[in-house]
Image (cartoon, rainbow, N blue to C red; front, side, top):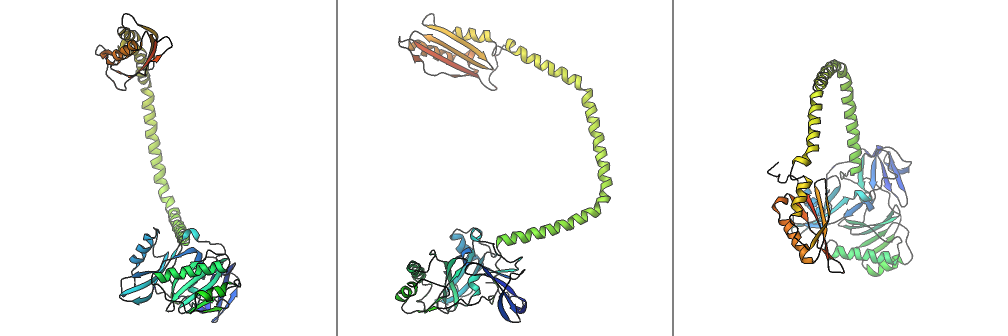
Length: 405
């Protein structure tokens, strides 16, 4: 964790997530007391907006930032940068370091009730005096928060799913503690501090499970700034500050541009006049060549109109002759021949299915009609065993052109 200090306590203020609403605390000559919301100061971010994941690291020194980043990336957090994560060493044991870490989840962050333009941000769990080796339980903005400690340092923090501190909440607390003990993260707690109201069956149930722990029900301590600043900066605030700096930079650029405007305006106006002159010359040249363009366009239209008569691949009479030449002397009657937009449709009636299939085979193999792609569905058989057939040919794009063209 980065070692940075807060400003003088005589001028400091903080905002802390209370049981149902946020609380503002101001230090007046070393005495902290609740007050009305103020601008700036320290913002305590509720535990609901954090994920906690302690882990063992094979090192006698401080865990590097890269190890913490890899830890969160392994858990699925892809933007685990230094401004969204905090980590610290809880203890060292057998060539290993037990590292506690918190990561801010932007999706769960709620800025309702924040003070105006807060200067610094800290997890609320770091702003309360936690027990030496035990569990602390309190309420933040309608949700119950539990913190586990070891050797006087925060080990793990979580928000209970239970909305009441009853037997179900006691079961949940027991399961959390058992999961931490299974990974050798903590020993049996020596004290359990309850800093909020609870149901009558909650404390006896805890006493049954945590026989070695002293269960204390007492008021929540007043929040205080942590000894060391964690350097937490939510992405929302970082974006707002970046946008503010960007706007300020733009204002400076605008002022500089305004001073240079008169100097550059004359050159811009001259260039505009020069470009307009060139555009006028181009339009004049185009107008002079317009009769020639019209003649070329008209010749092209005449060519397209005559293409069906001079191109054997598109001439209807020639194509009809080629198709009729494929018919046998008897057994097939041609009922339809249609040609439009490079597409030929041929349909007819055959005495038998074999006659229809034979005609389809000759049609697909005809060399003179290879420039068409033929679609030849199966003939349909009528009740009198006669077969009706249909063929559709589409002129291939960029296909072969008849040699006689």
